[in-house]
Image 1 (cartoon, rainbow, N blue to C red):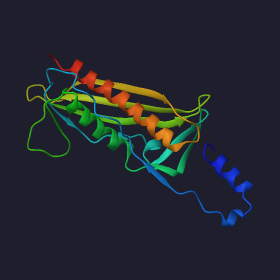
Image 2 (cartoon, rainbow, N blue to C red):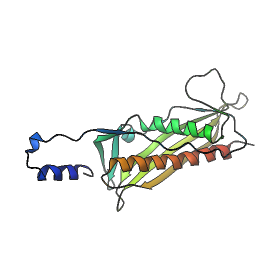
Image 3 (cartoon, rainbow, N blue to C red):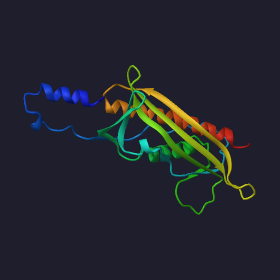
Image 4 (cartoon, helix red, strand yellow):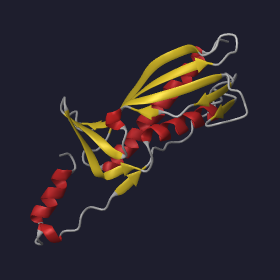
Length: 199
């Protein structure tokens, strides 16, 4: 009942009947942070970033929040403007280029043959009450080398996670904190890609 409690309190204090009260205005948010700075001198090659996916619990636009061990809810008034897994894929693809970790990044069909393929799956993306508010992100990433002689060799299959503090009951704060978590995870993924490719 993370965001419903302030709303219920507002209705209770209102002199008007709850049946005449206007519902909250739905708000949409995006994951956003500045591109990673150039950090690598020798790009690994051409990387294709495949579409990311999400586990079923998090395959939705509404903000997901945890309540205890088993409780989970969806905020129907605060949501992402696009699927979080797709936004994460776009941000990581961008960061591979801006950090100069990759010489080029492909998304979708292309006439160019990539050297590597990176895919991901969002395992967890939610708000957690930990004596306050925490934006929690957990992403599983797979990097495969595409080689005619040794096709689809797995270079790594790792999990990357980040927890960032946010303000309880504040959807904008949660979106900002989750963006910081995405930045942290993207930085980890880019560094792992560089380390995994043979020099």
